[in-house]
Image 1 (cartoon, rainbow, N blue to C red):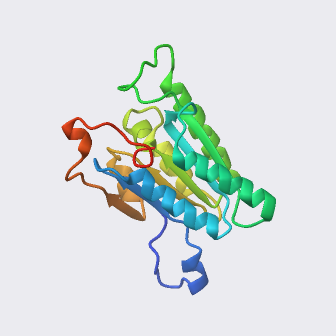
Image 2 (cartoon, helix red, strand yellow):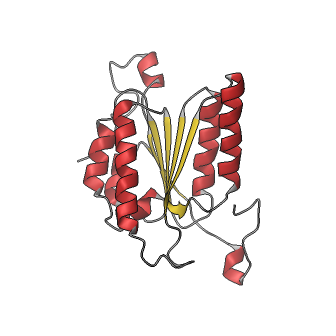
Length: 202
């Protein structure tokens, strides 16, 4: 049974209701660009004056990415001028386990705490757009229960859009989502031993 929002266009919905329908969006697959697409959507939301919440569930707060720097600048611009909207950026993870040591770090506990923060903000209607970056790994690893997450998303009040990124999105999440993009990899320079580049990977 789907926990998703009723499909747009249901009989009896007004044009205003259709425009204000909250969306659950999933970017999954093994290709590059899932998070990049989500951040592009966040830029659009910021330009609409929305409050944006970005929650990175795997990357550490120590990682300095271009997106984080850009959104920090946009948040500061909003506070100075009133243009756009406020941005909250939280890095909730300990980093990629296959790239660096995370000895002594309980990633499941970090993920659980992060999700509880998001769930509380959804209930309080804190933001109009949430990017839950790499949250599929949290669900796939069982750090937070998929059914719990879907129930919270289904009961969120108001018009709060949620974008979830990452590989291995659970089937239940895909079923519940309003929009799903499966990003396939055809070629990637890493396969030939290339290293990440600033401006491309971060």
